[in-house]
Image 1 (cartoon, protein in one colour):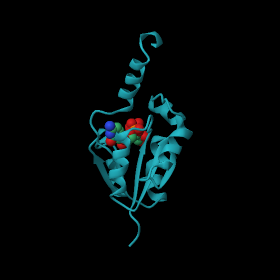
Image 2 (cartoon, rainbow, N blue to C red; image 1 turned 90 degrees about the vertical axis):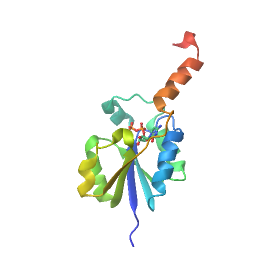
Image 3 (spheres, rainbow, N blue to C red; image 1 turned 180 degrees about the horizontal axis):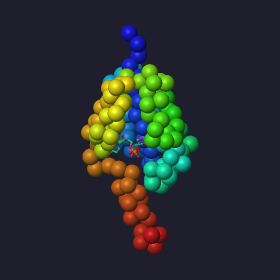
Image 4 (cartoon, rainbow, N blue to C red; image 1 turned 120 degrees about the vertical axis):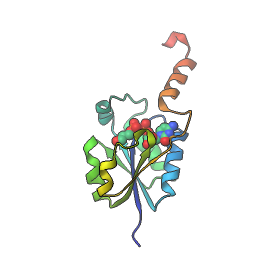
Length: 137
Ligand code: C2G
């Protein structure tokens, strides 16, 4: 029986329980979880500005007990190649991406899991800004 390899991608900026609970759920669905972490350059393409640099986001993901391997995510088009290169059986994302990667279904299973409510990097950034007070805005 070959290992069931799971692949997901994300920025994982300001790592929080929404990210953690997704990775925890994914790791329970297979034998190996690979995470594609968006590089700072790719985040610019995604139109996302990150608080935490790529190297630190990778370090945090690699220290996560649910993650077996971290690879760079450098462009939108690499998913098909990655699925084949790593022998992925399941591609999965949070359901804010529902339907967006169904074209991978000829290569592997595709799953969208419910997001964790009431937590997001955007909300954390706003909270931090508020804590710094009006003078800093
Ligand atoms: N997530 C979640 N619950 C939250 C916040 C995020 O389940 N409260 C999930 C998202 O659905 C995603 C993963 O955590 O599957 C990473 O979230 P982001 O870092 O915001 O990823 P994103 O910027 O959407 O990048 O090619 C795909 C992109 O790289 C995804």
